[in-house]
Image (cartoon, each protein chain N blue to C red):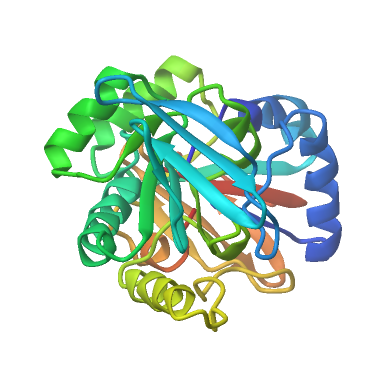
Length: 58
Length: 251
């Protein structure tokens, strides 16, 4: 997430969209970490979503 | 960190991938998954429970495991790199416990290696999930540095050659592990060498992502709109990025 933040900081102005899809069921934990890491790119809440079930492996 | 990446853009996807790969090259450590056909490297690490040594050596065409001073020559070795705070790892290790119980009397060694944790957390993890196969602390080990990209998993033959490998876990995949182990015990080749999953491939269109923001709780939308990628943020503002990179995050 931190490396992606660096990409966001450097290339957002050139048209790169950086995003994350949080799939941890405890959203508060994710919110806290996002704040601690200084993440400013968009983070979708995807826990339990069809998208996560289909693609969130690894 | 457990993650899957999604890369796309209004430019051809291959170009977007190349662009992002180039961007990432300077910032990410190089890590690999276990590769079918490759030999598992030798290692010696400390078990979370009581601090005994778990080591793996490959000698004269035979993998030798030493666990708590016991010398074993398994016909199949099942290895999972995990983290105690990874939910997917927990599901996988519960399934591994079942495999361990089914195969413990059949020259099969199942081992979990924590790649980002300490012995206290790993012991608590084993106790909570009632895991009885060896759990090793491998934080900062060469093995973890090389293979812990997304919680790697493999099954080797008696020579320590990887015959099955996957990253992450999907429900029901333990059936494939059991088939692989039974093939190795019978001296037969492993038919299915990894878990087949649906995933995004180069050339695929990004699915519409319409979910709330983790931070604000307001709607975010990312979709293709008239052949152009469009992202609407939680204020309703729409931007049209030239490329996009995303990841699933479990934290």
